[in-house]
Length: 446
Image (cartoon, rainbow, N blue to C red):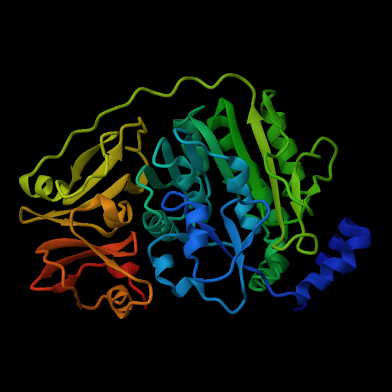
């Protein structure tokens, strides 16, 4: 891999005696990692059933390295949303955010949704996640990841951060601000970023980083926390941006990170010592930077619940009678043909381009209700009346994931929830022991 001479000179000035160790890190293969979905399964439970050996990621309690010869992206547990494949250093921002059940959380630059799934899992179905990105096309991946993780209390939006700040002043308890950057820390994993760096460098990103960061500061509640992060080593994009954000609000301060690990390095500029720098020659992961910022003051009480116009229909009611999951902290509404469950937390998205509000439960067509793939993911096996439990190595599991018809000796008729052990893969319709496959097309195994 040929690195730009200008970049090498900058890194030599930055790392001094550690420069040669940094260069040697490019000879090591990138580490493969997964992050367990604690909204569906505890870490302890997953370790008991894990199909491959795992080693903990020191800074993320739900993060684990897997051996190079494993392929976790092909296992049924992946399709059931039990884990997300994520680079180890990319786990640090959500770990630092430390979202709690009931928080109002914003992920400003969310796509493709990895950090949003971590924050959403931490909420445990309580509070609200707004997963935003300015790119509508990239938000399709974000939506898919949030749906597979079974996170119902989320809005997936497409908006400029400045526009958001004009609508949601001092609204959020937690804000994740993982901004676009020059990507220096990812050169080993994504060599294509090198050409982009040669063409644009660091200076091309600082103005947008300031703009997004300043918008996040405005949207943060007194007493709230935001994490500013990048995957670059540039002081211009890291510590200097943090200093700029501090200059915007006297109540904002850098705090000691709630998570630390051997190999973490402090910020470089005076006053930024509590920032975190991750270098690939010091930790098992790629390059990253993160700062935890808190706004002094008392967090106002949470807004009063708001009820939406409730949807009722005999076909829908009949299907929902098969479900025991508690949906009482939200409302079922009808938007065109789609039945949505929306949490009863006031969030006015009427002027936002919204990819999805809450949980898509299904569609009404010709007075018939058909449940959705996201609804299946939001359930557990014990929360549906008619369930088919398959083992990971059952050939029917593979066939179902590929969209094929399967059979079972269950004495059911009608809708069934197809699960791998206790975790849903999707719905089906059973008649005479034959199951018509209803898995969502974009969730099928290729």
